[in-house]
Length: 213
Image (cartoon, rainbow, N blue to C red; front, top):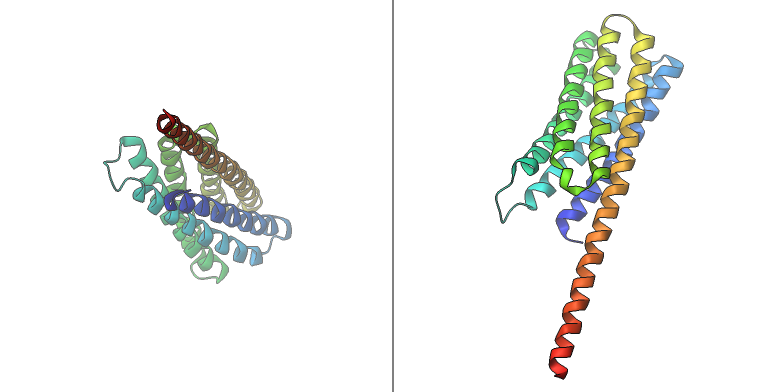
């Protein structure tokens, strides 16, 4: 496995951890109706932002020797969008948790999640050549982010129970998407490694035959 693919896989691992923390936090907020679960969501969004940055860097490194096509460029842009959106979410939840301009915090959170949803859709389109599983994972993450953006609009309209329920659903959709993406990317890397090994064996066998002749 090359370093770029290792970065992609590591980034996806961070995504699983981040979305898990967010799901736990959102569930706690919904069940207890207290804001202490937001601390988990802050951690989750921070971890997810690291993932997005790692994957964007990895995809850029894969293209160092050639020019990116439209899909590859959109995948990179999508990752950076998601990194920015997650960073905005982390800041927003800190504002809400610390009771600092809560309304502005929910507004920023809606914007951050909206940016994530756009970034996720860009990534889903850009990774089509990597297989249906990777595409599905990115699409689910985009959908979950959209749910989170909508949840903030409900909360801003003082419909907190509905908003928190939608937010919780969104985090579980994102968590599912991260698991799908991790499984699909792992399978892709294993398939590429097996193909390289087969080609190496065929080349070695061919060389032996030529030497014998």
